Length: 299
Image (cartoon, rainbow, N blue to C red):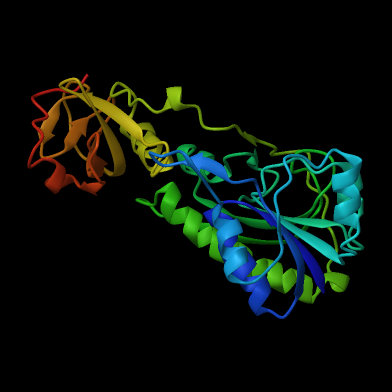
């Protein structure tokens, strides 16, 4: 098939690679424009942009697709289908309608649960036992289109958003190749009205750990916000990111340090397995503690 690929971050790269390896013709790659990054604030291409150039593919990064010129350029590609995964721009109806088979979205949740911007984070933070990937026929609503294919995976007890991100990216790459191979035989399944939830963007204000909360909630927060933006706590005036955790037994006042990096919560305790001090790289908890005194209690 003649495919337009639309994606921007790391999550999208394995999908681009899978499409390129599967023999489909990639007419063009759409992604977000380069952004200033690093200490020098030099413009840096997105992961998809960089990978597309390595593959010798045409890259387009319009600021918007709302204008007639951008829409005409998209339609002129005469694509059979567009594959969209974490692209970052709203697709107007003219764009959705341009490819012969429309636009297919790879969404990292079991729709209709966790429509929206941060489905992986929210699934872990909510304590979901499983999540997955859906291949969805796009329409004007936010992740409301019918589902063509889906596959579920269990969420591990100590799995972080970073871990799950990588697994779901690989799963999405496999599913989209399967979907394109059998597209004419797939029956779109409308999403039910029951069970709809929305994965709101992560607000950094959510990231501070409240040790008075139950240990299950604290553990989910830490794992759900790892590696970005990173849940954090204050240790003697220093902000320390907590990037990995597990539930353990423990009682006492919330915030009490039981030994090592095990902290009492409102109900139960968590053991921090990975953390990052300001200006340092992420490290295993025992390495962090070589230069950090937690004291008797964290606020």
